Length: 284
Image (cartoon, rainbow, N blue to C red; front, top):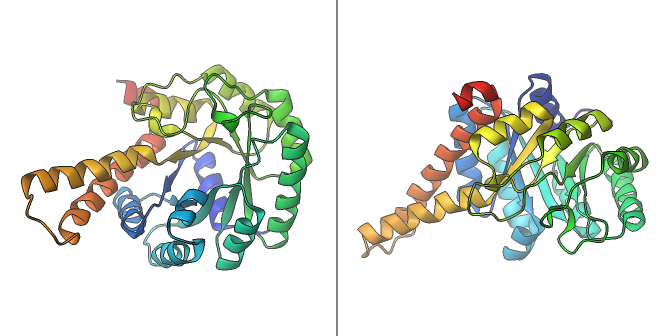
């Protein structure tokens, strides 16, 4: 399969012993902010749209096409990625719209069913030159790979990657989705074992709950793609709340969405630099 834009961003980061930042788009201001932040850092970035966000907008097409247009105008390499898609139909729609990559999430299924569904999705996507990420953690777990305390088994990861031919694997190493505090405890030794076990890039979900130093250490241990959503939403909402508290008479949404967009851009620049930095330098 030819290299996709996601391959270029992710594999380029791994070649530099750096992390590839992947940030979730909720509305058009997020996409604009993430690209602006990446341009300020002078680093590539991945724009992600989740199945939940597609549902919020009524379908994938409106927010997907807007995000693709913003990506095309960027001054740095930008990939557009479908995040946490449980629906094969949504994967097909994303491929048809021109997404560079998809994350197919069948992690809630028992292992054999997860493997079969993921392999079918990978076969379809690779026929269309689209990169595929999958998730592996708790077998049959209600919360997939990111249920509290769940860990991905390296031997199972090796077998799963070989059987499904996925291009990247999201693994459970101590982070959890939707954390609003940055105090997750990562298992760096497990990250290193997983990195040795599989030859595809590892993906850290739930990275909003991980502090700067530990993000850098996670990359040093073997993580490549690092997903962030809640942390940016906190910055976005905080900026809106501050503006409305200071100027309660505001009625034009551009007056508070602009500062919120700027706040997200600032955080993206910071996080991309963290992912590109040496962990020892950040610690000091």
